[in-house]
Image 1 (cartoon, rainbow, N blue to C red):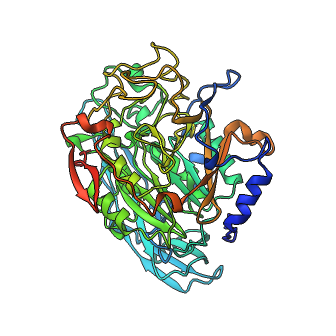
Image 2 (image 1 turned 90 degrees about the horizontal axis):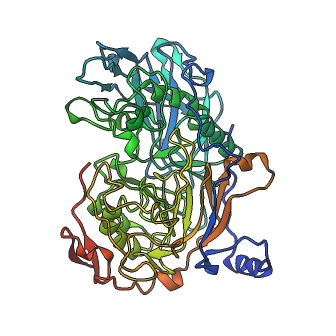
Length: 562
């Protein structure tokens, strides 16, 4: 059972003195020491670049309960700590040429819960639904899901452990007891214990090592930054997943998926997700196009997020609070982001942490400048509101940036960190765009699966006039090609400890892949908001126009359409 340690706050003067005492070699650096000289740790050739998916026959992926009993139980935070979402699946999914959806009303959606084990003083009911993945092509198999239940618990006390069962009591089909602990209320002195960041997880042997390792780190919240199951690395017949779909199936009439991988993934994750909330955001592997051009069906049905609670009309973007942190889970929606950031009270939630799937800053060849349009559209807004840290995935490697804005080192810019190294079947990325001319993608490469193309040559600095740098970019502080996960531990209103754990470190006591204190400087960056002019690299984009907002000129873009 996972527990949440008590929230704590250390005076800033203590941390400053502590850092001074540890100024000698071996101390944990802080962002105040930056910008750092770029550092690269090359791929360790003694390790494998990837591994096969865990087969569906593995006991960890097998269904272990009767048809009407809950499985794949998962928690999700609501906007505030007085509520929590609980989701689960009942019934048997079907795959074949002719499939008939289950009746969602045939099994109830019920949660019993209370503050004492075995004593459930509250009951809440929710909704149930199914989805289908259908293909209009000869030889492809269709899928219809089990019944997916979502129940929102409300009236919860902050920082309190609750015990619960879910299911349908009328059918005598309730789950075993699980428990969770609620987050603190927004407060400048209280924060979640440890926050796990994982991207591009999949379900390989590397993925299972990632999960086993992060469980040892005793987290209280998981942020999953897209590309979850990699069910679309399969044909509909299942067989074996592949690392490169287009290479293995060049004649496939559509990007097929094997939807039972979602069920296996949910079962594998249940010991973790039934006890602490997992907050997700979509990635390109969740698109899963089917009949009629429908997409994202599995993602939108299986996961519940606090969209309505955060005034979003889509599960593609939302926000929530956990103690003194405001989290933004972003797809691409400028107007909503602007409204959400405008409402943040830094006196209660001094930290603003954002997460989305495709990175804006990335020096690897893979996905290089792929989502440059999104950066051009939205970076000015995040900079204006002084977002502190941005997490992304998509690139299957680790990279931490110096504080940066518009490709220029800036002490008030966010710290961008890419954690797309969860362990998926597509293998680790090892090539950097600056390794050589051959490793530099052409402007016609890395076309996004949604959104436009806005590739640029740099207009200033050592790479002026070029598409790629000829050395590791100055905004890239550290990069390494290894699988792993990260832990964010907020200490107080200005200090947070970031630690990246490599999978191979699980076998070495006190070994860390990367560690740094991220330090906010509100006295420098918040009182005198600087004016963002048309210096943006995006000025050549025809879809950009300027809108005055609170005396600031920021780039305003029409949001891309999925």
